[in-house]
Length: 337
Image 1: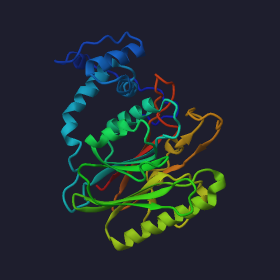
Image 2 (image 1 turned 180 degrees about the vertical axis):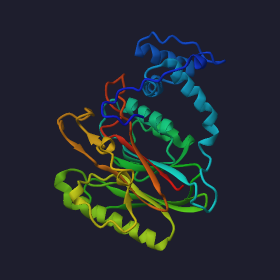
Image 3 (image 1 turned 90 degrees about the vertical axis):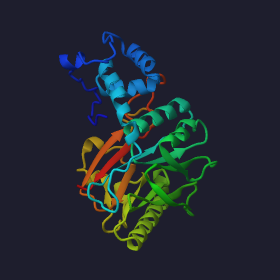
């Protein structure tokens, strides 16, 4: 997905040779966007949410969108394959997405959850942290179990978090720590496991919200950092990822252990991907106009030397004229090359 400020669709040039390839479905590009979405959904037996997601990425060129969709079929079997050799970090690449999916907002929830699931399948992260998950209209998230092992923190509560890991991830332990100072059901969710023989710890959280609860949030963050430090000290050479909707302001950050880094900073501090809750561009929440914050963050520890960072979920759903969530998803890819 594009990271540009104006979110204009990219125009993709297609050569005459490409147009003449055998087996390509003949399409009419002199159509409205809505007609292209319907035709894409009919040809591919998917839905208009999937159609919009791919069409926007290729400048609404229907032929190119179909090429992308059918071309991706060849990679279905690779989705669950390990990306690294056993017991070595060399050549290791791992992607992690974190997203507050705003389940507490009941407006167009079923449609928004379908859009969330579609975007997750398209981005295909190895690990997914979710916040503000709710029982209502959970089916699209639950269906992701065809691709992921899913662990919920507090299912049945008003809202909760989830960690989804690729089938290649060998899960050894799942813990949920309830913050004693929280009045908002907030927890720290921890999954311990391994990928290709490498020890990995995943910590997902949703810290206390609103400026008035700064003291509680800062104490929760400090607790999380202490837990990260304990894990790293007890497991030399491990990989650790901590993140979620931290609701933090920069001045509230402290107690970060040595060797634990901010993924957005590691990727170069690109201002185009800084704001994860941006009411200038996302109008799902009324009454907050003019606010933008970097609430959603990923911290990491391990022998990586390259980090790429992007925002996802920034395409409006046409059927309900809203975005999948009031937060953008953050997606980080970590490489050891």
